[in-house]
Amino acid sequence: MSRTLEGKVALVTGASRGLGKAIAELLAEHGAKVVVNYASSPGRAEEVVSAIKANGGEALAVQADVGRVSEIERLFRETLDAYGRIDILINNAGIMITKPLADITEEDYDRQFAINTKGTFFAIQQAAKHMGSGGRIINFSTSVTGQMFPTYSAYTGSKGAVEQFSRQLAKELGPKGISINTVAPGPINTELFTAGKTPEQIASVGSGNSFGRLAETEDISKVVLFLAGPDSGWVTGQTIRVNGGFI
Ligand code: NAP
Image 1 (cartoon, rainbow, N blue to C red):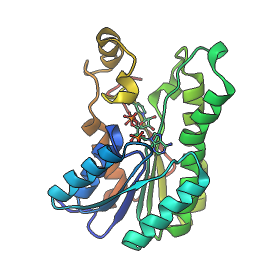
Image 2: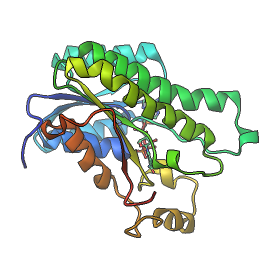
Image 3: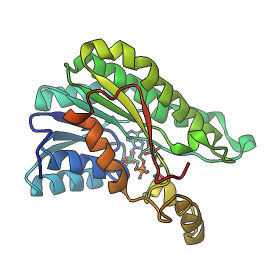
Image 4: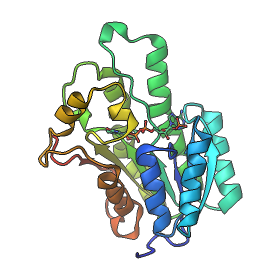
């Protein structure tokens, strides 16, 4: 295992399960010290930390709701207090509210955008303040931003803004030596995608790519590892669809 992230500190939001967990474990395997952020699953976050430590890595679980700017600021303070620096920010925390237009409430809309959009924006702001040259910011969108899916309007709206943040901020952060990119996966085998769906629905949507199977978290985390590492220095301002040819 090459330890390309030795000496680096990574903050992964929403790392108690799903994709964030896979990313946190992979970055730690490659030598990064990892802050495992979560909102409401302390037990699962501690399991991720224990798995990383059992594998010889270093990690710390920090609770913070990224939908609140004051909590994002505390999350960065606790990261800096623990490890003294931050090199990699993975803005992975997200929720998906899918409803027909008529059923979306103001509360749904505010929650969708607070976590996915505001959380990402203000975490980028904190990262830009504290990262040095070589810093990496990786945000999350979805391949559905390129499609027309009923019930996905609020979710894809919240992610479309994230794609623009990466594009527009690349030239503000470039002079500091910081790159910023967005990964836009297709369906992945996590609770966000599988919850509330029948096995038939999961199989039908999940196999709508070139390879005929649902993506696993490792299919995406490997691309994140590349973007977080030393070989991606010339990639910035991009939205990278990692979806097996889903779109
Ligand atoms: P998931 O399995 O539902 O996990 C979501 C993670 O986000 C959990 O760790 C959760 O923490 C955390 N989280 C939720 N609200 C939070 C908040 N307010 N503050 C901090 N953390 C919070 O989701 P996933 O599938 O891994 O998705 C990860 C990212 O990929 C999301 O941005 C999602 O939009 C994107 N994505 C997913 C898919 C897919 O098919 N799964 C496809 C395209 C894009 P708790 O456990 O504490 O609640």
